[in-house]
Amino acid sequence: MARWRPDARERLQQAALELFAEQGFAATTVPAITARAGLTTRTFFRHFADKREVLFADEAEMPSVAARLMAEAPTDDPLTAIVAGLRMIAETHFEGRRDALRQRRAIVASDQGLRERDQHKRAALAQVARDGLRARGLDPLRAGLLAETAVTLMYVSVAEWLDADDDRGLCDVIDAALATLRAEFEG
Amino acid sequence: MARWRPDARERLQQAALELFAEQGFAATTVPAITARAGLTTRTFFRHFADKREVLFADEAEMPSVAARLMAEAPTDDPLTAIVAGLRMIAETHFEGRRDALRQRRAIVASDQGLRERDQHKRAALAQVARDGLRARGLDPLRAGLLAETAVTLMYVSVAEWLDADDDRGLCDVIDAALATLRAEFEG
DNA sequence: TACGGTGATGACACGGCATGTCGTCACCAG
DNA sequence: CTGGTGACGACATGCCGTGTCATCACCGTA
Image 1 (cartoon, each protein chain N blue to C red):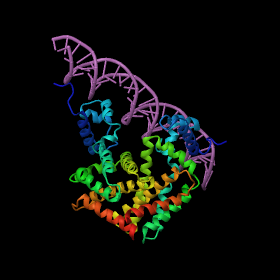
Image 2 (cartoon, rainbow over the protein chains, first blue to last red):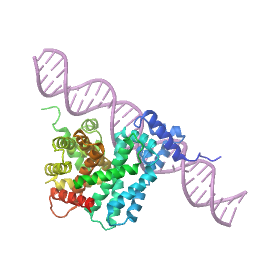
Image 3 (cartoon, chains in turn brown, red, cyan, orange):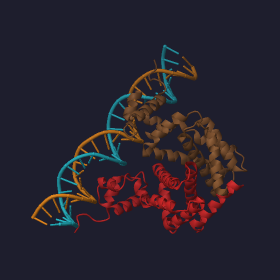
Image 4 (tube, rainbow over the protein chains, first blue to last red):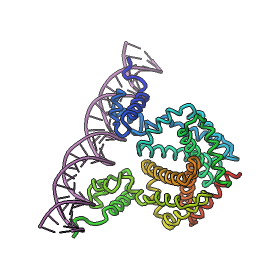
């Protein structure tokens, strides 16, 4: 028999999600998580930088995905390329996971520290997009505005999508959001 | 003589800013701050929710200012009203403080926890703007997009303004940002 | 079989953050 | 003079997050 049961990281994630749902994020201590996972406190912090990070580990790859999309996208008409990228991310990372994402959003919304971390992830995503656009030759102001607009479209659309009663696709919501925003500037 | 020297909160703010500039945010302990201010650790947390908050106390009034602007603004052509509000905030809260804001930004940029708090304040501002627009009858999607676009314009413009070598006014940068963003949607 | 390197984990200590609780004392209203 | 109020001090405490070292299965190599 192996000295340790495998999948320590996954067990920690599972235990943490269960405890957060049972008794809330703030009331859950790291020792309680590791006890349920059969590990020690020190091991938790080897896998996650802090107690919050366990809720964001799943989307750790999004910045690199965004960076790749920025590098590949055509540089003329960047807004269209961005929306195409958003639709691609929507299909690969969001579509079909609505219930799980709703539950995760409820936990994040319940704690200020978690909301702060969520905003930080959003800002990091915007930063990656901005750097990618700058590397493609766009001036700083334009790159910043486009990158921020891209994450705004994504986040507002996801919120609308998760709030909705019907079962619209996220891509449809993104299209609607883009049309709505465009109308504001053409009115 | 009074039992305590007055202005405990201001003394704590002053001591904290000095120590953050001298030795960095992470290396500065709350006891060190309170020692310099001539107070106790417990008193620090009576005035500030946590160690980070001491850097954001100055802009605590911005959400209420934004809420008032949203309530007063005309509801037709909300984008124009929003930009007028941004210019107003720029003149009252930013213009003329560029050096101080640059120093504060350097401190915030040096620590992840501070960057997270900064993003949280931005999100709270957007939330207030969104609620104000919704209360004026805008549908959720439109309110969310406009509110997020407003804070994007503000933050991107402030960053550009603080980065600039010349001494352009922030209002001019906001106008340029609006024109740039509009061009993206009309191209 | 032998053996050294590697890498994940356990075990322990520790500083700092944040909070609860109670006591102290100036100030103020009547 | 008296009771209430509010800011602060003093003390205790729990948890977070990190540094450090020991342990031991696993693996490649001979």
